[in-house]
Length: 176
Image (cartoon, rainbow, N blue to C red; front, side, top):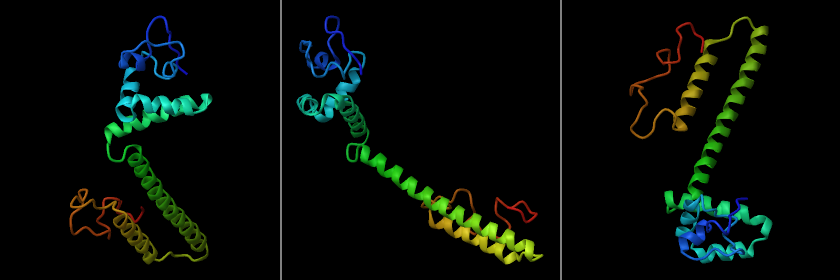
């Protein structure tokens, strides 16, 4: 928790509001004079009286967290007036879901590989059709998830691109 020296300099809130910073100032512990932008942003979005009400209603041990939350939300609202921090949270949640799907697919591929590896020890030759199926599955997954195309952008792949040996990941010797 930041502390303010009452005799030397008023807190950022009192300085911005052009009033005397008294020893019992509710803003002083949370808006030090070294961080005026923190109060200015919070004041623009919530207003000084609303912040004062919030700080007086919150238990003393929760005030620093409340101020940090207000400061974070105020900064997010200034960057994105419509969604604020909810927009950032939404983007992160979508990324988590996408990565969970990718992890599930990778785990399924790993299980299939382990199963095929076990079978390949029993059966001398592994058919080429399973390798082609594997490529087709990944191509469909990445196209479905938007990895291959974003709108009209094709990430350098020709429009007639097929994953039948001429792709950028092929090494020519059948390995992936």
